[in-house]
Image 1: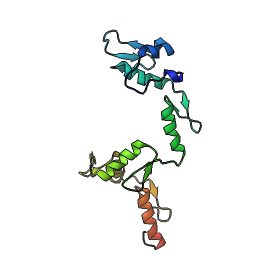
Image 2: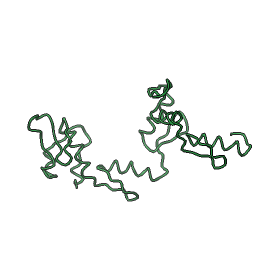
Image 3: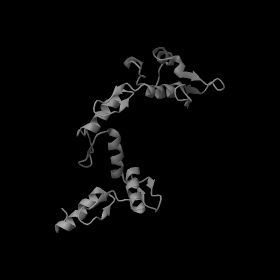
Image 4: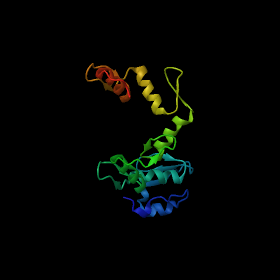
Length: 176
């Protein structure tokens, strides 16, 4: 396991010798035929830079373990981010609507819906989507993959909201 002080610094530079003194030198080697490549001795992956090898090698030493599930992380910051998956905390709010998210990455993806930019093309038709997720949901329609089923009539739906809207037809109520 890497001691906390052996974790890579947050800035873009680091000292590989510092890393080696905390770890078994047999885990790191350079490719003798090409000094530009760095090989991880644990899994034999090849990297172009020492920094890339450093970033990769810490994943062989996952010391930050979640107490609620069996996941482990190389950095404490990643574990802290993971904790939100076990809670209802959603600290990142969209300024354009009332939605909130557990991670900044999720918020960033969501903001594409407001931008109007659609970069993801359907594999089956010319329709475009703002996120890969929305494209994947759309693909389920083409593939007739229905993950949600009405308990009353057994009709299948691609999305949960489509099932919820459908359920109003059985209750003889109008959709809110």
